[in-house]
Amino acid sequence: MGLLSIIRKIKRKEKEMRILMVGLDNSGKTTIVLKINGEDTSVISPTLGFNIKTITYQKYTLNIWDVGGQKTIRSYWRNYFEQTDGLVWVVDSSDLRRLDDCKLELDNLLKEERLSGASLLILANKQDIKGALTPEEIAKVLNLEAMDKSRHWQIVGCSAYTGEGLLEGFDWLVQDIASRIYMLD
Amino acid sequence: MEDETEKQKQKKHSAMLERLSKRGQTRSTNPESSAESTSSFFSRFSTLKTSIESQLDQSQSFSSDPTNLKLHFQSISQSISDLEKLVAENSYLLPSYDVRTSLKTVSDLKNSLENLTNQLIPKRKFSFKNKPTKKDDKDTAIPQPKQPSQLSTLDTRLAVRESPGFRNKVGEVLVARFRGSEVGEFAVSDLDSCEVRILGSVRALFVHRLKNSRVSVGPVTGSVLIEEAEGCVFVLASHQIRIHAARKCDFYLRVRSRPIIEDCNGVRFAPYCLSYRGIEEDLRGAGLDTETGNWENVDDFRWLRAVQSPNWLVLPESERVGIVDLSNLKNGDEEI
Image (cartoon, rainbow over all chains, first blue to last red; front, side, top):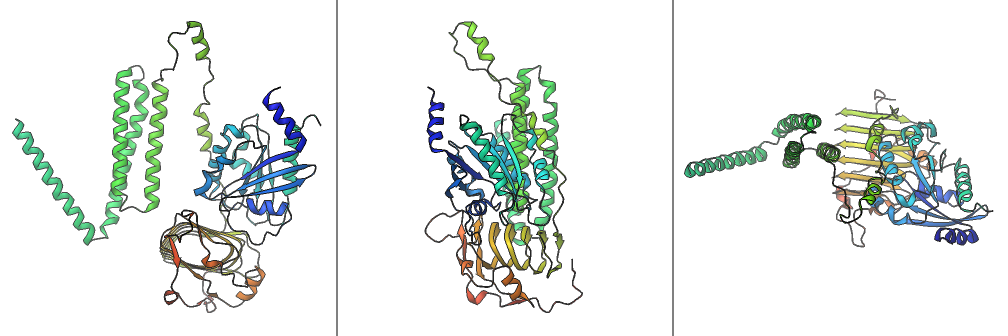
């Protein structure tokens, strides 16, 4: 029995998924996690380091790693890559000026071998703000169509402020991971 | 013969010393000359740059002649390091943005040289010499890493629309009123010696590249992101505030969460002090009607230690501006 299948079996028992949330600073990662978990989102300081949340979602347990996006600490993202089942890339759709930065960081991330098997959910956040780019426009700017064909990915517009779109996004992510890891169910 | 060259050397040396001392003088006595030297730097920089680029373009013609090709690449590499030196020497005079873009150009040139070198001078493959030759076939069959051909697609920048805002002004008073209307993001960028007054609420505020300006803003219900500011005064209320690359700026803040700074220097903080007719209502509507005291709970991402960061301090009370009152603006002010 290969190591991979052993790991799969262990995971299957626990029905556990490891989700990594990354993106530029000010994109709303922490707000999204708290909103999904039904917590108060009115006072959130920019993340120094990281937060871990364990959430029961449908029949699965999600371990969500929410890692700070400030430039200084982006180099630490790599410490969280191991065993990531799902990658959530959060975009501030109202920050038109830094979309280039956003694309650059995402491209770098996707080169990472340890993340090559992870399902990728792109959340085009802050759709509630007037003037924000639509998910379609974000997909174009990030050139998502050019991504590796083997990657499972999806882009969803959302608002961490109103909660809109979050469940849709996470539903897709969880289903996609489940179909890969818990195939035998 | 040797004496002569020695003399020449000395002559050169003393001439250089003289030049240097003159340069030092003009620098200390006449700061206005910096603009002149900046423009001369740019012209030299661009001449060097174009010559390197054309040299790079010529590289293909040497491809049949490996020894000349190597020499050619060496000379390009020399020119690039000269260019780098030129930037380094002028970094003292140039605005930080220009230093960065110039360094970016240098590193881009270096990259294209490296790419060309890899392309035209194939690296010797590592192999075990005593292995049977059959295996060599396998070695060469190792899949190559992805070609850099995708780089070109990277440049296909989309013509992204601009958000509403104030941009590219010098020495103006810029006023916006957003009373009662829901406004999304607002951008304030590339201003020099301006006074910006925003009355009412916006959802998100982006500030970029400001010099010697004052920015007073009603409550921001989302977040504020400031990048590159020098010699400015900000009066802001918001749920979140992030400040990057600010130098010698004062911030009068009311924040629901902890404000953060990154790559900042000489920034000072004090409590919010804005006033205009109806501000209490706006603040209440944004959930910012009570002082949280967070204006002094600054996190410095460049100083993750328990002791106070050297990059910021609390603005002494004696040096604070009083109340910034925007109530008495004349109707003739620019409105959008």
